[in-house]
Image (cartoon, rainbow, N blue to C red):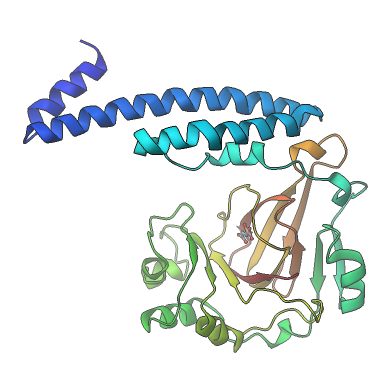
Length: 318
Ligand SMILES: O=C(O)CCC(=O)C(=O)O
């Protein structure tokens, strides 16, 4: 007897009524259909990735055709008849199908600049809109950061004053930010024997942003006429953990200030720039450093290093 038949037989003997048996069968059929659709998509993705890597001009024609095919045929078909398949494109396909990036932002770049006391003028001319990452030290606004840490977040969360818009549990088991901030105090304090953790979340609720802004200011060198979104991002966690390699789809470039602890950033150029630019950069951030990064063009991953919990706050500017 095949594995599938064995499973079905068990399902039928466990089932309470005919309806649940039928549901299970429909589910099994949909899952099988999803699998074959995913196989076809993977093949297409492979061809697209290959043409992207080799810099083929056919890339945009191919990816455009793929997107059209998806939105006109596969998407509606999946969402109409087979709810389980009606998911967005898998992450790796999103990556492959994103519009190709103009590599001018990384051409000739050999290392990430470190600038102390960056002026608004230099920032605007050399870094703000060029896609060149930079690490800034000695920003006076960051020197005034007070009390932003686990304790404050925990208290705000308990008082229902910490509203998050997006939450990333990464490899932790915490389903919500509230759950994460309610973790065992000894685990939060990094006591030996307790499980490591790393989480991130965004705050876009006006009142919550205002509360956090009493504790931390945006970097002084950001363009004065920047209408940056009031959203703030917080990432924090224990050594050895961080965010996996990914590329973002956010509106603007970002800044991120290291408030405490240390974190290693690994930046990778997109595939289409592999033969035009250096492929990978690393930079270690210490408390008081601010990284400027266009996370829409740089793949990036992070890892807390050193002995302490890393806490960062960041945002976007335009
Ligand atoms: O700081 C981190 O650990 C992750 C940051 C990140 O992935 C982002 O800003 O897109």
